[in-house]
Length: 564
Image (tube, rainbow, N blue to C red; front, top):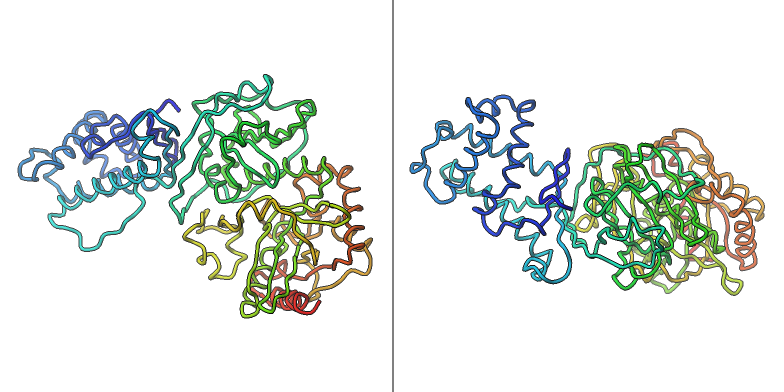
């Protein structure tokens, strides 16, 4: 990134490689601070007209910016009665201005970047330490100016995250991609991420719409990015390696991947990826498409630049779609659901896999089971909370996961649940409906390990029955699962009863001809191994506030674990 400070709407990216102030004076003298202050004055013309008139006071915005910075630099070293400035004639108005500038900065989604490696003092001291120093510097500057204008010290100090919300270190990486993908070769890889949690983000959109569709040509030929405006998050999704390239305007979504997908190390990034995602491509279209490069055996996805994709569900689901497509080619069956290993205090242990589309009650059923059985349950190991796979080895079906975290609707959780792990969580639009939280849940070693399945159940949120029901035949089970019926709750563009092939619009629906024989093989294997195959009734499609259906389902799940 060429700019030392990139500002767009409510996004701010600070490039420590170009500019890193070591003192309050350096910060105030910097071109970055001047540009930011000038930007605020331009905004104040429409949103704070009284302050705008006070600051300009017959000057041009450029002149006013110079005078304000001069005053602030004097305030750092002098007492107010030693300073000659027209702005000090109304200290209360000047304090209002300082407060508004401070709030304007905090109102941005703020990120810092620094190159990993050696050669600069900031690199050698560590990007976390550098970002923390920047955070302290902003806060100290604000407090010193505020207290001088107040004429007294504060009595209460709040240690707000006033610098950035998150920081990333980046590095160059040589991949084993062919010349076909040379346009990607100079884009910087994320090496490490520091999240200031709980992190609260306000994306421009709060739901996903449209479908991911196959295309006939490789989107790499339409790639419009470069190393100054793009980065790559190298992710381990299940057992696959994905290079998720993203436009910097969507850095909030990309950084949030740190709570969801394991970040690949430098050695792993020297390998050829299984998946490539181009997120935020400025191709003048509104596509969410994928392509199978059979020559290279790489699945390539593309999501066009648009304000509506400023929602974490897009980058997550495109990545998982590519994963599912690649795994189906290998003979693995993708499962849209949740899978946990539950160990009771009496020593009994069961692998519970629930399947269902968005809003069906998969995660909610697990949460209800945790709450109901807290006195009997010794440990709950989460294998996956949204997407996983079943594959067969030596005649036995095993489950594996894809994510190290969970992306969950706050509306569907018990009120206290989001706060349990809030110190590590990322909250998205908590003030809106369909608000979400991304919480780390499990280590990658657990995700990418084979796990035995003892119960496989479809999450039914649309029938009036209660509890847990075992299917009479595998044909009945397959029919229910392939119909993928649910009562949609508006988490995507759908509302009301809907059906999706195998409850999974992220690969299986697009490639039904490949998925169909996989379903037959897996369900036959489940039957041969005597595994419970049925459905649970969550009732979430009727009344989200009434937890009776979930409680009954959780009670019968617990009884299965205890007695089967």
